[in-house]
Image 1 (tube, rainbow over the protein chains, first blue to last red):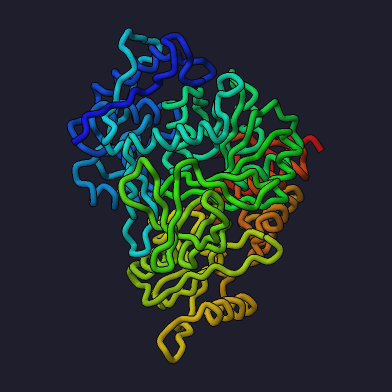
Image 2: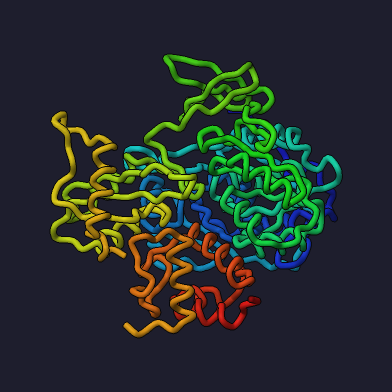
Length: 451
Length: 89
């Protein structure tokens, strides 16, 4: 086993700020004191389900866990069932958060530290082969799919991104992010960027345009905004005056070129888009207002095998199969040809229809069921619809049982109760027939009681 | 279920229109029922779209660090009252 180690904050001096938290800068030595205080609270376990909502607390816990050689488990949502399922698979685990978690049945640690304290220790060195995090996505089998991330992989990817985006090139950057640190994109940009590149972390998770605006405004260094197309759209429509921003990075859902152009105009900055997935992390980027082609991260290579596209990342052992169909332009550029049809992306959350169908059908009283994603008309946001055969359950009972297991963005609207599903003679459920039945039932007004 | 006031009906229509809740009639929304998770079952994307519609129609920007948020969003009635109090247009 390799004993090589990589230091956190290798570029920061002792009195330089690591984060902007609760309206104040946190210096490196204060941060290290916070880490050591939390380090001493950690139980003797191998896995910590890191549910901190405060981004600074997440960072403190993340580093404390790495020092303890513990792996942070990052669930795809805060749905109780999802957390408990991960707790079942990883028996030697506990939940960790800065607040007391209600209704979670697993062991939990509420971290606390004296924020005024400082210390003289030097930044810790972390074993590069340590699996620092496991990021979960919804698999197609009903079980969450684990994507382990070694410390060295996270570091290598952040260094490539730092160069690609010219992070800190014109003076220190401060990172404001609207995405949670438990999401792969949020982890890489809002947690690993600060640890590796010395960019300052803004602890907030601004949501509404006014929050994002204020967070950027109060940021003490040159501003970078990490966000999603949904937030960008809201920001463009808000009619606010925006402070200077070095650049914006968007991911989690495709960014329409028209929105990218509008955002560049209103925010007066460049909008970069990252293409990535939980398996590989960020893979490629583009300035969406100007280019349709994606430029692979430096050193990454693509190859095809048995009709599927694979990716080789220098820091990662083995290769990664891409879930999306791509059209290779040259060695370093590609276009997206379409998403794999089982995979869904709604509000930045990725799910699989197969997984959602499994969960819906597993509800006691549900005899048969299928989810379908209607086609978007005029780029309007569409919601999943579901047909359910469950004679003894009400709409509310089905939705309630489903809400315990899936993120709210995947809850079907409408959920339509039917007597049977439209199987064809091959025993399959053609999407076309499912959609037609949804439309027919909607016109009948059958679903009104679900509203 | 109680009758909707004028502002409640206006906000109910805004919710139905901006979120494409084509299956819901504005007048049928229970003003005391929860807007998120239960009741209408709205989610975080809806909150963002609703915030856009509110800023456009009432010139008022919602903030997530508002300590009263859970109360504001608890029902159509409280959201309407909050908008009425803070509207700029």
